[in-house]
Image 1 (tube, one colour):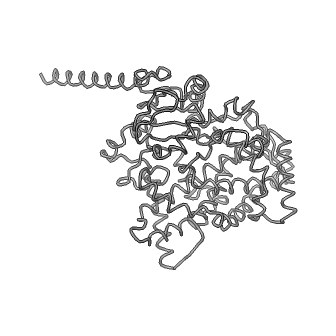
Image 2 (cartoon, rainbow, N blue to C red):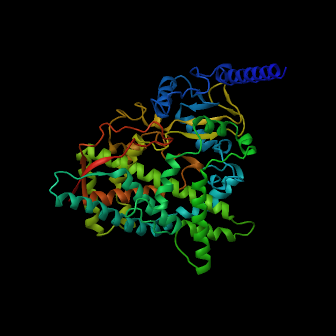
Image 3 (cartoon, rainbow, N blue to C red):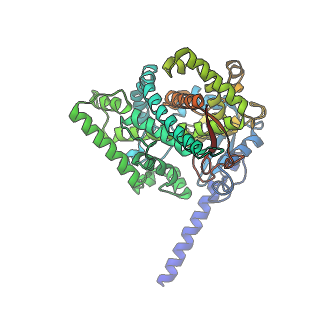
Length: 500
């Protein structure tokens, strides 16, 4: 009797689940929106992590429907999303009608997992208040104050590479192949560790320091698999009720401890520094409710993660592209030499004159968009201009950054590396939403100026001292890691390095 009831219950649950999934995966068909038939539990991204990255299926969808509708219906494993196909609609969502798309809809759990409640994830009044408080961190004055730290660590970076080159020369080695990817991550780890936490991480000298180990762990050892993560994103209220965390416990414990110890030391010894943590400390004193410790730890955490990984990956891709295009590398180096001859140092004024280096970085970010999609969530029903369609409240909206960056109607021969695409006159001729590595509108990347400064200065210092070319170990073409949830090369980026 008991077994019969149990079996009936199981059959009923499975039946309800099938009805639920069938209803969910027919969402766009019921609304007459262009779409591709999804696979159950995989949506339209069943190949991701196996044979493709997220870029390929979204790029294919974009190219298939971009001239047929301003948006299309796309499916992630457990939810439907509206994938934008028209740059004017992108502009409306990110800028003109931002008030209705101010949310990202990312999962976070402020109670059980406070470190996940950072600026990138927050929505609603909490996001708006935090964004307002943190904006002063990234003024021109703050960039000016942080630049000497970037240069100082850059000099250490150059010295580390020079030692490897000298060691090869000492044994008469014909080439000096150096794995640049990890070295660049250690450079940006040290920069962010100093600018955010006021700490001398020195991972350039010791790659196994905790900051480097835990920074790498965030991106390589996620707490949840793809299906579990899809559940969190699809049913955030239920996930919070179940006390599900996003960050790994060891990662959370490490960053919480570092922030706590640093705050205690600075409070005890009355330490003042021109860094991110000092600003957060000042925000504790605001009338009407300052930042709590948990809020400070979460913001310091995301500043570190966003600052070291995106910049180091961009610089790695840029060096790879320059090694493959020696004439472009020569032109970039000539600019560095010209600016150095004028200023004799890597000052803030010198940084502002690295126009071509900046174009190299911009073209690199077009070809290798570290965040290949942007997500927003409709707060209220939204009528899509020029159509009879409505994007319903609660629907996630996806902006396909990578697909836009590879649209041949916007960027002819998009596979070709050409920094002149970002000469001022060329940029003026394109739609303002045609380049979105930092997003756009009120919810763009708050640290874009810092990220750009660190990448430009780091690249300029390397080009001043070294020439980069393909080594025997250099992968051609560069292989992208299909399992990474941000765009990253698979394995290292080995380049031959020669002193100048």
